[in-house]
Image 1 (cartoon, one colour):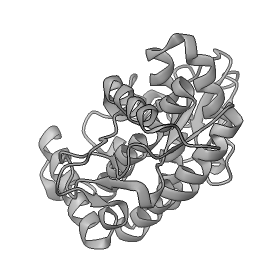
Image 2: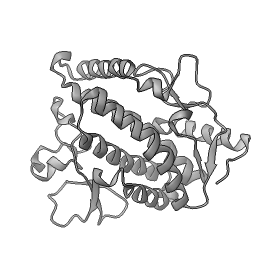
Image 3: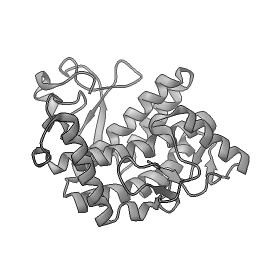
Image 4: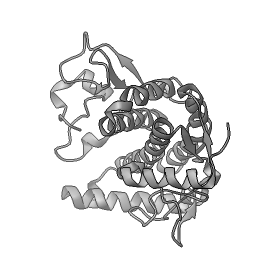
Length: 266
């Protein structure tokens, strides 16, 4: 594995920025962005959870005290996990390069909704990958065993949220990132899904859910994948059903027993 030239690295991050959404990485973080370890420190994460809880209350019309704190923890983790997966998959699939997304390389604003949702210290740092298997290995080292693992551990410790919720959130977010990338770049959809499938087999993610055939599943259950004969089903629940009018997500493990409670599109 070798890193690209300075020009290549900066160009890839510029292209990720153009994709928008969770794929964007801030290449030159503004003043006030903190190292990943400080973002996940107890006090900082407690403040972030409180901010997300307030935002959920405002968006649903609930009183803050009525929003289950674990829903805020889950929402926080899903958002940050998605911001790790999306640029990793997009850069690997579209450019044959993975930015340095290790814990020591990342920065972010200390507050939810800050100017730097996720950024990197050095936009030139990364790894050229010549195959999807190599990309999966690099992403596994940097993200799954690195930044995502530290995120999950911090959310479990500070947020008192079950590991199964966090692991299944991470797996579902990976499937979602692949789905978005495939929609944005249909010509690279097969590669996006192949990389996602390989990552789903990583030991830290394998317990988060499974790819299943639709046979035997209730209609409308399962996360959509590239092959119509495959659906993703989580092993846990994101807890969002505890928000008004949300219902269960189609890939939720609880949906297997209560398909009538699924809200399409969630």
